[in-house]
Length: 118
Image (cartoon, rainbow, N blue to C red; front, side):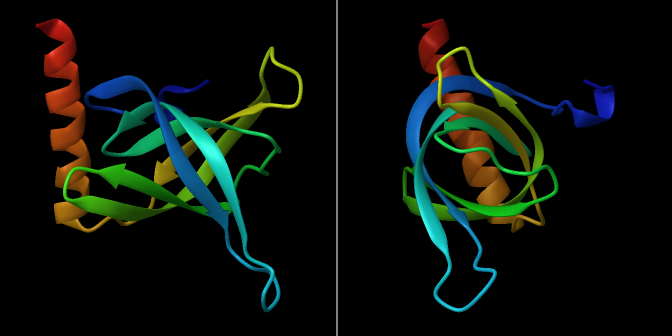
């Protein structure tokens, strides 16, 4: 993996259930899937899913954070099979998050990371 694919900034190793939506290719074709977030930062995340997603594909990740849910539009960077059959590890980068949404994620990561250091 190249340095350009790695996320800069603080990251949180976690197990958060989230929803991932693959945008519709045709009317009424949108798919919402349950995923498990493994790693979260203000610039992207890694999650597992029961199906593969093609690198370059757009997705919408719905994160449940303090203060309410946040929809983060993202692009798939890579997709690799996990050791667990039928699961895929998918890395995405967030696309053009509003500054306040990026801040909410960064604050969540900082607070949760701080709790683990106590």
